[in-house]
Image (cartoon, rainbow, N blue to C red; front, side, top):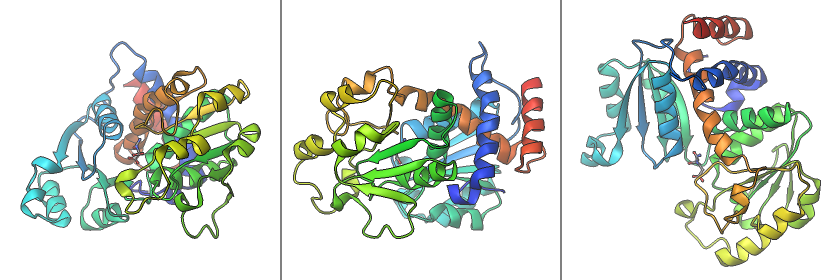
Length: 320
Ligand code: NCD
């Protein structure tokens, strides 16, 4: 595997590879000097056509902790503003000599195009409503860190599923690992056709909450909505928000997750996001180690995906 584009392409074995290797990089991240020379001489460029705080900084931190050189492309100050196409931009960047391109783009499928045009490893950091595989990997790692396993976990994904690449990647990743996923949203925030999706669906959050182990909340992605899909944000919060009242009724060990950025007071009450069983900060922290594992598997020595090589590589990465 040369690229990380979608969870289904990675498969259950690929997920195991990344999460297995992540442990080593969590350990590296906890050192006083959290840096190993594993990717010295490699160059990682982040090509972000959409806004990002976490994902971009997380990939850059991950690359730096592996001693790779990093380049950042910011659309607002680039020649994209002068009309340069994605293809020309990619060819220009590749001519400078890069090893990996981390791309976020508003169009579903853009990372697949980039993978065809160039010779670098391509990592999908979010393409439109489609996929965000490293988010699903870091969420999976975070759940396993707390619960030991995802197998059998009952997970409710709540909110704007329709516009959410995070939901699509997480549904694939969670179900590949044996979880039971329920989508909870008003009809207007679900994809029009859910045939073949391995999920249950509900529009009654209060009926679902007593039967879940994990509540995964999504932001209302207003920037992707062309029509008013909910009557008002206040009514949305009343029916689908994890309010203080709903959070208090949850069993003590129910985990609360959110990919960020949060809109406190809309999908999650301000106080609820800071509860001890809310894992939002752990998700961000683990994101760096998960992305180190992904970069290492794609660019590190003897880059073949597979349990044997990755374990050997992890040992080598730790030793160096
Ligand atoms: C999300 C995204 O951009 O896909 N954020 C993230 O990467 N952590 C979700 C969102 O914007 O709501």
